[in-house]
Image 1: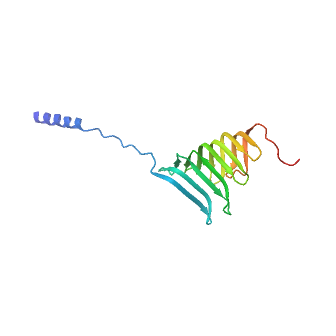
Image 2: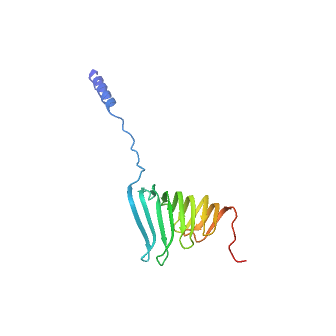
Length: 174
């Protein structure tokens, strides 16, 4: 009996010296990091979109983060530069196939010489639409429009400002 007591005490002491097993922690950070990325999206052998980013993080979910910003160029079927989009940082939500740009977001329509500025903008690539609920400024050749909220084509060729501010002049024929 005394022998069993000694074995029990020895096993207890050894068990106390063993570190406790911890639960594994699931890694949720980026799986891949890309620097100085330049990517082209083509259709029928024509470049449709050119994307540049200084840093890209790719996650297990397929989401991508662009913490140092993103710059995109959109081209017509004929290969002419149609519009540009840049943002201080961006995020691509793969499941929704949705882009979000933040911080000094700028969209330019080259042909119309118009420019949109806002602090946050969403881009639905499949619909070729951009939208925001934030304050927007649209600079045209002869006028500037301010407002809150916007729904537009990605090239800014057609847009609606949800709540425009100030005088919006009519430039049609009388």
